Length: 196
Image 1 (cartoon, one colour):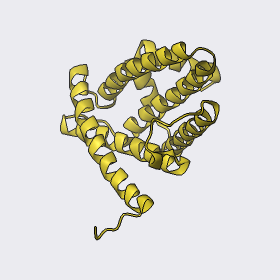
Image 2: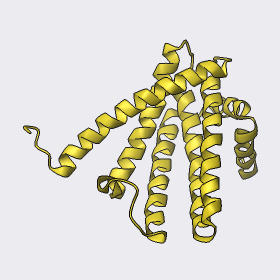
Image 3: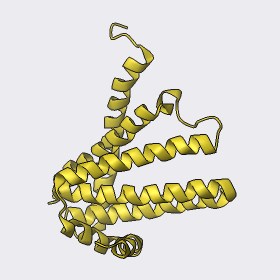
Image 4: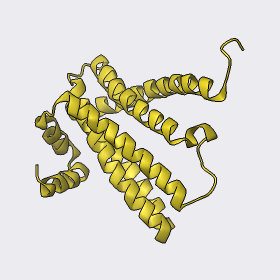
């Protein structure tokens, strides 16, 4: 696909996310390429996090443990993997037919768009902080709208209502999974003894 094609797909992802999802799934990229792309967007996310800390210094809203780029990357990458499998398994439980690759290509695409929004927000925060906040808020709402339609198309529901149910169940599964991941990471980092 050409650069113009990707730009058009980005626009369609906002205006008609169901059509964008079908186009992305139809690409059928190899699973290895999709997992590599997922790691890449996690790396880019981490780089933006580090850059924002350098350009906009101040107290971090995150716990000190998450201020380390390596830990932040692990949380982002782990969260994305959990998201893919949570949507896959909960979708199947709701009668969906999507494959892991279908979910993966859509999540990677959404995260790629999110990286672009983060870059734009970082530029705006230096010149127009209010616009930056509005952009982030609007992107969050649009992202939620897109994700519902992406889940619907990936699992062939034909019903955004069922996709919302999968999204809610997935969020609960992701929160549980991330809490386990954080507890596993926090122990060694904080030097917590397993005997305590």
